[in-house]
Image (cartoon, rainbow, N blue to C red):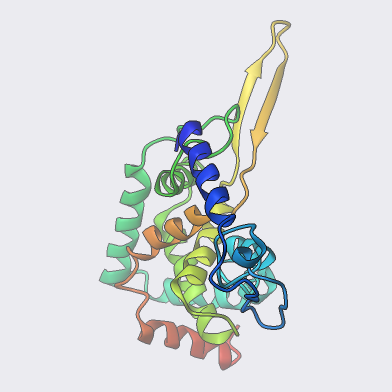
Amino acid sequence: MSIERRMRRKLDIKCRAGEAPEEPNGKCVAWGCKRPTQRASGKGLSEMYCKRHIEFKRRHGSAWRKSFSASELKPIREAVRRWMSAHKADKWVLRTVDLLDYRLRSVGPSKVTAMQWAGAGLDNRERAFEVLARVCDAGVSGSYLLEAVLTVRVAGEVLSAPRDADFMNTQIAKLIHRKASGTHNEYRRANGGAWRRSKYPRAEGGFMRVLGEIVAARCVDVTDRETVREIASTISAGNT
């Protein structure tokens, strides 16, 4: 998205937010929140959530549930790895890993340098592909992507969490994004020295949902309900 287009969009949102809302006393629907909605306060377009919960949802994919923590995911990831090791010769697992490897290779090298704002001027889908390019450059394989999708699917089965697509795809993207979240460039000085410039984009926003969706769509042959419950049962049985 160009700077000019972004400015026009920002101005349009500001003008629409300033219009009289249908419910001038509308309250945020998040549990326990009594703040006015963005629309009611004239600071945004949402007629369901206040600004605080909009930002929370942008970061975690849910207006009430935080992202899965490393400690929550640890026993689940161990169970997923055991299952993948036991089924590594399964034709559907092999096919899925091949599809994911091809997806990583097909995006090409990263096009964003550390001199740029990471993702600046790109739409959500382009930013998602840029993350996949950086992940590929870091040597991440399709097997890890499948592990990430299975981990989140099983977490949704055994933990208290929403199972809607926004939350699940955001959580999948977070596991992928952290593998190569920064862009780095090294520069040589005239005196022979060197310096490095790094940029670490925040793992939040619409592109995270798109990233998770792109990867999850290639795992449907393996991440069925039966497989998820099979892995989940090994956790509940204490085999961690």
